[in-house]
Length: 129
Image (cartoon, rainbow, N blue to C red; front, side, top):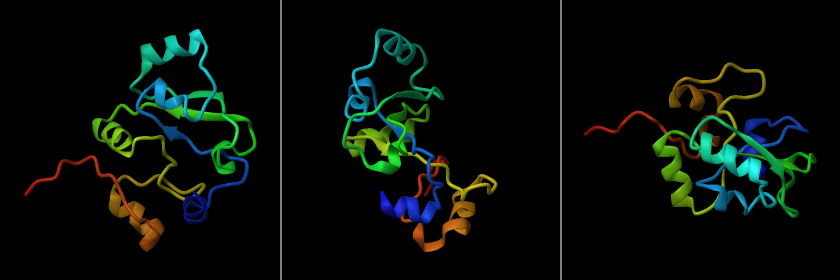
């Protein structure tokens, strides 16, 4: 987590989004979701909906930024969902640009921002031999 905050230049007081596979995985970082939250998740996940829920105690401070809440999303992209499922737990999902910089459109552009500090990247373009 410290590497992410350092490399990304994460602003103090700004929580970090996490991706989950489903509500069951969300429960590892948040308190029990209400019926309304469950209905929203059923209707809009996977997708762009981020649920901001009460955070479980003991999470790394950068995830909540002292808010007592955590932002959770089930990604719409199949590769991102596979990554989360393969990780077996929530995956942090900050944007791939420094604060106030233009979001990159390619992995190469993200590497231009972060250089060797970028340890891995998920490219949505299909691999071809």
